[in-house]
View 1 (tube, helix red, strand yellow):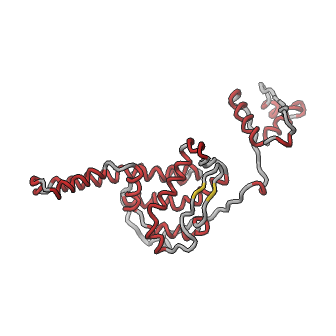
View 2 (view 1 turned 180 degrees about the vertical axis):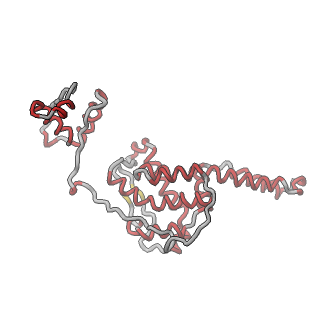
View 3 (view 1 turned 180 degrees about the horizontal axis):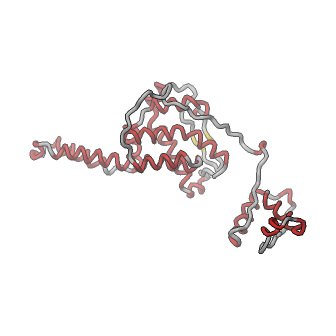
Length: 286
């Protein structure tokens, strides 16, 4: 680690050049020892390092930290799969540029540049935003047409029932609203192309570091026709379970948490092609 190199050079300042000597002005090297109460072979080094890092940062915000690099045989090897490049067989010769909601564009932009954990949350926020505003504008449009109906003054039972249906749309839970906007604006055939590209991964349950287990999204023999018939709410449920474990620390009480480890990031990254396609289709349909 670079801190050790600096510490070593600090022991022979007189042998350094004037420029490098200036670096050590007003700097004091510090060293401490950890005295274990048990034999060192019986100590969880990774666990005690987390405790030491916490205490050192608490007392000194500029304190160096202990980084532990596990051997490759100690880590679960999660392979990375390159996402499908084209949504069609090739790039279209031409397309029309229509206005897209600016807030959604900003979410998509920051998600594409973030690490997998944060990217997942930003893409999911597109569902949350669209679920509220899409249904809100949709109900307003339907109510506007309803109120312009000249026969509304008769207040027939059918008209009243239609009014109750419109109003009940606004009282749905947030999850129901998100599901509705995905069902109306997203094409399962597009999502299937991403699934088929990494079918082995999605046809097996996923165990995350931290205890959370995600059921397989599809069966090994799932076909495009089967997927088109069952994609909702299965896909939305899996995405919501991941999102909840990323956001809500209280799930730890039930051993259902996704720790911020490299292995978990690689697993989450495999889900991002599906998530981004859904968010992009919503952006185009809003």
